[in-house]
Length: 151
Image 1 (cartoon, rainbow, N blue to C red):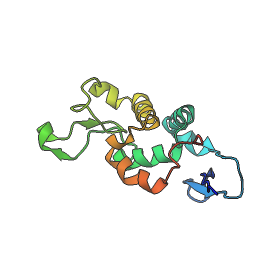
Image 2 (tube, helix red, strand yellow; image 1 turned 30 degrees about the vertical axis):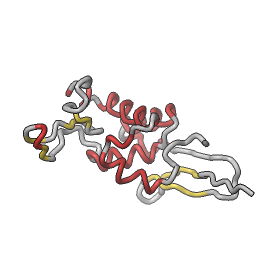
Image 3 (cartoon, rainbow, N blue to C red; image 1 turned 90 degrees about the vertical axis):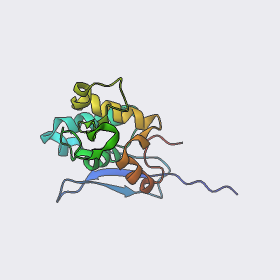
């Protein structure tokens, strides 16, 4: 007999803090996901992040956690020292895109929040999330809940 394991989750904001939590629904044979974007009304860029995540089938909570870890949603240059970059690391924007490694991306693009979100979401959807240090820290704990579509 073959055993099948599926990820079942509902993404709902916690009433007290507004933080999105994941609830497992093991008895339901259908993958369910719901995101209440009312939490994001104060930050339209977060609403855009949820829309992009849904469009490309990536879990928006994961994207939120990676961006929070990378930049705390601050559109700034990295504070890290990198010898190869000759001082401060040349990572910019909320997604901390390292322009010295990605010469096809300009500093202006990296600082464009919509560009940065689209770039992160599409790369994670393609399986290239490991380019972000925070993704490498966070994703292993998700154990398959990275993409919303069932395999």
